[in-house]
Length: 176
Image 1: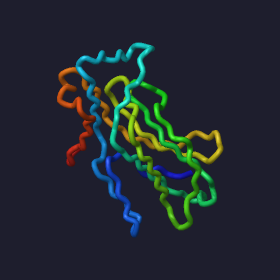
Image 2: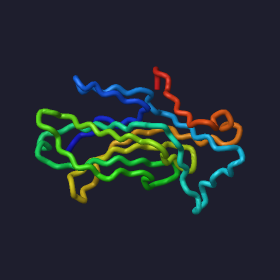
Image 3: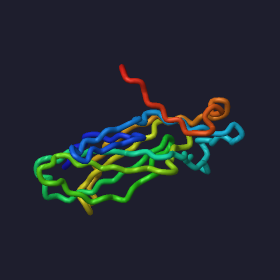
Image 4: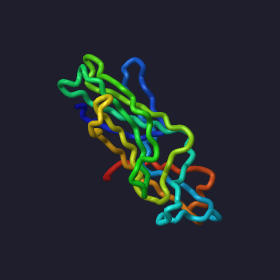
């Protein structure tokens, strides 16, 4: 079975057509979702509460999986999913995509362009981007890798400075 290498979310991705190398720009680690002061806060304990959606210009999810011995002739399927704070089920899934590893290549790259609305949950917490793989057309358990993103819902005064946009903050480099 393939081995997970990484999954990440970024604002910009560039792929060199000659070398096939990828560069990521503005890696998303913290997302802040402003809510107007007049808007009634969502009650996380209510059964009637629905998750929030935020509008993004464009984000790109990138996942890489590594082939292991014996994987060359096997057909697998890959799927992206997004989990939001306060929910146990995924709120966004992409239909499974069948794939095989190419001969002489040990890595397989998956890319998902996210435009428009992204589910962010009904409360602040950790949002997770998941990349998962299993043998095609099987009921086997998925192999999973997840990328955590801090998701903050800003209400009232905290949101006033950010009402015109969703704020995505790259983290400073250094100790983490």
